[in-house]
Length: 306
Image (cartoon, rainbow, N blue to C red; front, side):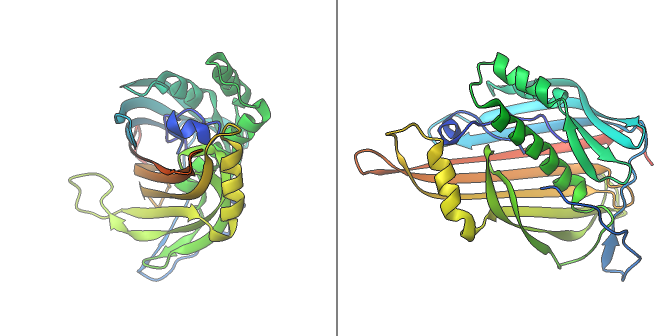
């Protein structure tokens, strides 16, 4: 799902002081059969020509800096290309004090998520165009590294909003756990081994004011896995200037709360909350902790109800 105004890629740890991040990918799954009343089955059924109005409210807080806020409006469209569906973002408009807002919106429109008719994620198109946008803004990172990051983020976006759930049945209060490699919250240029949990929280009204509980509330949470901590610290250290501070510790978390129609997996609402804390040892031996957190809230209004 193209759920975002994407924020600019962060090249490495040094950029945690500069820019926030974006908001894994799975293979084919068997279709779920009917189950007990406390279970909910999820089916992917986005129609050809699907179109939705998307609104986003973003805020981020970084220690020692004023808050960053933004409001974005865009159109999510699906184009049929033979056996593929292309998920495209168009007509993006935004306002706020995020200095990277225009770049982020341009990247959002450049990248196209390509999925199968069954909702399986296939690949990202438009990555070269997105890389050219970054280069035009003075981005100096390795182009192939940036390409891998953009491709990974496109897959992760679809996984969290559709891929984890399609063709599956979930029971209330019985989350599933996985260990995956995914983007580190708020530093998407750095992949990390993450412990994840996803599951069904309950049934809720699809829209405010409704009484019928037809939609499912789903959660997807991630934290760095303890077994990957040493490798993550090395990756963070590689992003700092030589002779600069040393990375002592890192803690991060990501939580997505999705309200979606289980009959179609067409989203209604999505909230993504991310937090990051990094402890640094300065050249004089003192330690400093850098903390950042963000919240993105999306609403989707489909042009046609199915």
